[in-house]
Length: 150
Image 1 (cartoon, rainbow, N blue to C red):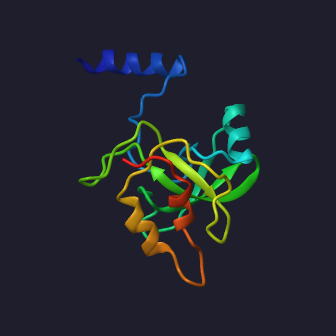
Image 2 (cartoon, rainbow, N blue to C red; image 1 turned 90 degrees about the vertical axis):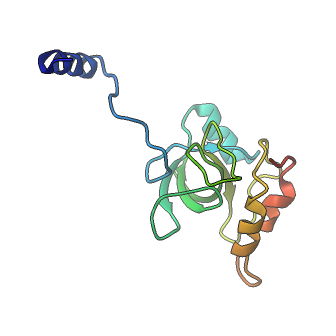
């Protein structure tokens, strides 16, 4: 493809309002997430068509993977959540999902909802039990409310 034609196609796509950048394959700031529990806040945001966006990922790299804790902006509030499924290339034995799934939690690790509607990876059991602390947050409640595992 010659250069003038490529430049012309780029201008046409910008004029039409189309995105020409490649999609990102990891969770970072401003990534849209899907709430998969039955919390009232999560249901309302998803029904409005304004899904939560990631504000911060609680790890050293700033890139979220399955099992990481994130801070999200949802309906004008800041809430924490656990990533229970990611749409990116995963490590071996970790399933790849169609969407970036999130379970909303309180500051002490208790989930806001009482049921998770999608299956969560079984490899997440070890990671969440390692993250739980006796006097801190207890993330094993997320495993208790999950109904299906992959």
